[in-house]
Structure formats: structure tokens, C-alpha cells
Amino acid sequence: MPRTVIAGNWKMHKTSAETRTFIETFLPLVAHVPRDVDIVIAPPFTALAAAHGALRQPARVRLGAQNVHWEPQGAYTGEISIAMLLEHGVDHVIVGHSERRTFNNEVDATVNLKVRALLAHGLTPIVAVGETLDEREAGITDERVIAQTRAALAGLESETLRRVVLAYEPIWAIGTGRNCDPLEAGRVMGAIRGCIDALRDVPILYGGSMKADNVAAYMAQPHINGGLVGGASLDASTFAALVRNATTR
Ligand code: 13P
Image 1 (cartoon, rainbow, N blue to C red):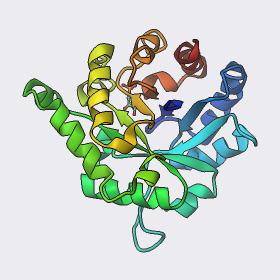
Image 2: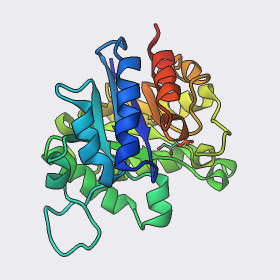
Image 3: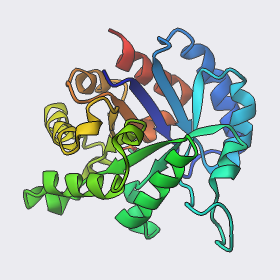
């Protein structure tokens, strides 16, 4: 069985001070969530140190980053390495988010380089794939997301592949309030899981206008193992309610 993962992608939101305040409020609210559920928050790079300090060890909530460079170091102005993330207790990294594909030249080949580097260092990549509205309307959703998945994971051994987390984020559903119907999301995610044998037990998360009041409908789908949450992860009480609704069995 894939494990359950609920991850908050904060995007370009929250200073270090705001991050500390969030965590102080959030931790008690998720204290009774079953231990087999992975809760992840991915603040901006500048707030990782504050988050690491506030989460305390051993941390109930895991720390994620929103991007990474695949090279260990070098002349890459503005980039962040894996060693820099490890220093701040990061163990998950979002790779291939559609916003980075759109605004920051993220392409399948760089996603693959990042996934390989992360896995080689024992970190968990959260690999995001998803179709545009045009692609959906053209009837090529499955083809697109399968191509993105295969490209992201190209050249990896089955044993290594079992350590990834995937996220299906239909681009038209991100930040729009127009969430994908859970049944349809589950269908696409089943197609993603089916495209490589080693993905059988890999968590696949849904992302795109996921909220506390719709998360249970997603979690009821067999191929949906959690969420990658944007807007609804920014407020501690709202995100805690989402996590609890996702994990009430
Ligand atoms: P929203 O939950 O704001 O739609 O964002 C989803 C997302 O992009 C998470 O990575």
C-alpha cells in the first residue's frame, strides 16, 4: 500500500517570522494525526532555517523545498544545492511544478536530473505532472502526464523508483478554485501509476484547489494517496483541518 502524504506548497508566501508563527499554531493541531501519515510543509528557501528550528526534533512535520539544482555546487547564480537543503533538515523536494515549468524554464530533462540527484542523496522528490486546459480539451491528458512521468523517471532502477512521490496537478485546477472531479483525477492517476511497474506502491498526490471540504472525496479514490496543497496550506487551522479530513478513516 502506498503511504499517505499531505504536502503544503507555500510557493512565494511567508517570511521566517510568519513561518514560525504558522508552525507554533499548526503542530498542536496535527498532534493526533496517525503517525503513518506524512505531513510536509515546503516554505520558501529563506524560511527553511526558521522552519527547521521551529519544527523541533524528532519532527512530526517534515520539511520540503520547492526546487533544487542538480549540481553539487558551482557558478549557478541564484540556485540552491542539495547540501544546502540537507543542512536545514529538508527531506522532500518538489520538482517539475507547472509554475516552474512555465516561468523558470523547467523542462523534462532538468526534472530528470533533479530527481536523480535527490534520490542519490536519499531525499524524496515530489514530482509534479499535469496537463493544460488546451491539452485536456484536445483529449491528450493521459498521453501528456504519462510522457512527463516517464521523462522525469527515465533511467532509474525499479528499486530507486520506489522512493519517489508523484503529484498529479492539472494546471487549469491550480489556484483557480476549479478542482478536478475526484473520479476523473483518480482515473488519470491510475493511468500514471500504470505506466511503470515500479510505481505500484508509490504515493500519488492530487493537487489543484484541494481544500478541507473536498479532500475526503479525493482520498476515497483508490489511486489517490494524498495531496499537494497550495492556497489551503497557508493558514495553520485551515491546513490542519485538511490534514485531519484527509486522514480520518
Ligand atoms: P492550489 O491548492 O492553490 O490550487 O495550488 C496547488 C499547487 O500548485 C500545489 O503545488
